[in-house]
Length: 180
Image (cartoon, rainbow, N blue to C red; front, side, top):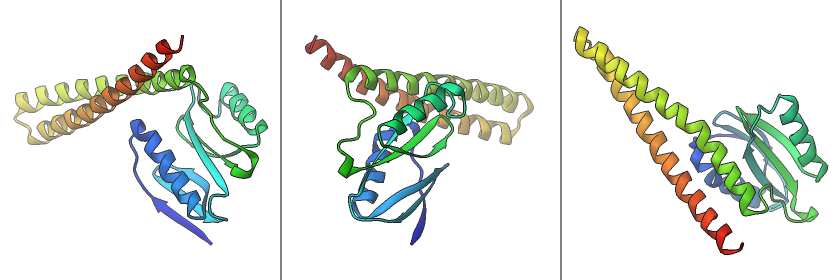
């Protein structure tokens, strides 16, 4: 039986999203489709699959993205879907451990890529907020002031996400230095 669940995760909560998907797999709900805030599951044996997700450097539809997806599939993983630059894979747990980021260097690189995506979005929201605030004050427009507040709130959320990812990245960098 198929089940569709709609759930929101911020980009910096990718590990929480992955954990939730693996918890669902442990309950016998195998991920079969992933779209924007929409996950589709089908019944399976509990714990039959492990799920991993990753934000690619290049779009999944680009030749580089397709090469990476093919590379991961060669390891026995199954490509489930994509949401923008995020890709979803599952692999039968009987086939052994399933890791996309086996060492700190690749984890650090992955976190850096997410941070590089979020920073321009944060700056864009700050710019849009300032622009709307100036127009709202100049024209005495409540709508523009409200838009400025919304942009500021989104920029603040993105900032908090970048801070969390930076902290995680710095912890991994310290660990890497300890083992060098």
